[in-house]
Image 1 (cartoon, one colour):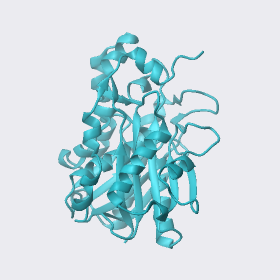
Image 2 (image 1 turned 180 degrees about the horizontal axis):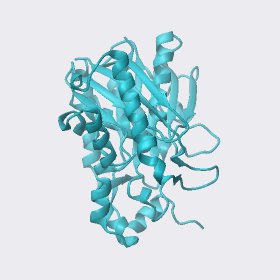
Image 3 (image 1 turned 90 degrees about the horizontal axis):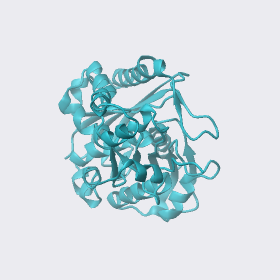
Image 4 (image 1 turned 90 degrees about the vertical axis):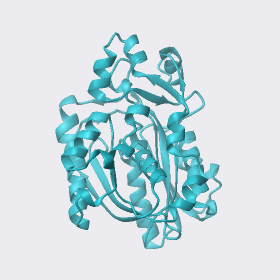
Length: 345
């Protein structure tokens, strides 16, 4: 069985509260918190970007896997905020973790599901025998235009997964994807901030794809919502996440540990990988997990996962997701604007 051999998270320590952003733009913070179910978000510092986040997450994954980084034959970094328009983030990560140069590496982009697309690619490469281990990372320093609704949620963070077939701590039984051309969110070349088509965002985009991917996978593997101990979905905000979980028939005990957006914001490509890492931190072995990502444009990847008892030996080898969430330093809007380079010269 092919699956997760090691996993690791990273979330910057800086936070900005919804109230602070609302103060600057003269908006009602209580209405925003109620409407989005988001209270604060993680902000990358001046010396942080998608590459540094990906490296830290990868190092944590290696600590748990305890494998030789030279055995990693593939590195994929999924993000919509790569630091270079032309130069891969994946090569930076590979060099930083001292991987062999005899590997395949690439950056992936599919809005917020590029990280899970990397996991699927690594699954295929390991199953085919082309590589011994594959490293898939979902990381972002998400963009939101000043004053735009996205600014209240667009956050920074990411998680990394090492995929292999030896000493697997979580078996990925199967995966299923659902994809259409639905223009709900986009950013044109050279533009600093994305735009969103409001009427496409909910029903024809997020809900249609997440629901169809989840149902498609459950039909494929013969499972029902009650067969899962935990579930995690993409979370552009807390409201969408809880609504889709309930539509699919999941209860709070199943979905609450994967829901991180209220406390760190929407980390885009890092959202489902981070939610899954928080769930894995709590597992003891034997748990069954449903994970469903979503990327605007639009598509969803769903995974059926069974956790092995080996996870008890590895999960304490690296800093846990909850620790990153709890270690925080609040900043005001001026520092936030400086960190995120919102002031254009």
